[in-house]
Length: 208
Picture 1 (cartoon, helix red, strand yellow):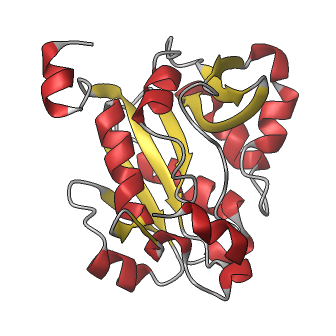
Picture 2 (cartoon, one colour):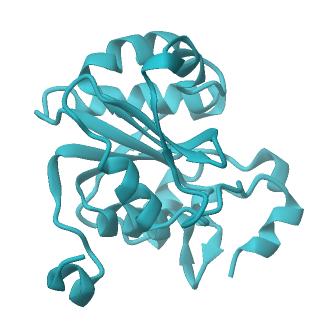
Picture 3 (cartoon, rainbow, N blue to C red):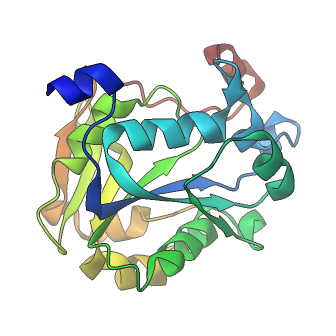
């Protein structure tokens, strides 16, 4: 780690890689409380997750909003991010992934790192490791936890059309990654992160 990283807790930005935060979910199993607005360490989860992407070195960050988008804009500090509205958020994560990829078209970035707003146990160390797997427009990598694929995931721009074509319902990129298992580089992160989701009332105890 460089002196700059020690001093600021941020890695040097990677302009060729964008961070894409999927933060549109309505929290149906949480009584309809949007996950982006759940508080963690005194701030909304959306703001926390953006800070993780920034600290890991994502130079450009796009945030897909859906449920309670206006409230998220008002309560979370998402300054410096491109905010993407997904009016079809209720259809599931696939629609948010498609909206996010579409928002990156024409930006010149060569890869995107996708993270989920409801995984606060995944910090900058794990994200930076996955960013480190970037090797050009055909990059395909994912964090792994004891050998099991998880988030975040890294997609070179060559894969975006295929992912957009198969991202339906709550599948996200799962089907595409299944088809390309042999080409997907797994980056072990179990020693620096916990990949739990905040899905149910019982999970809320993991927030601080």
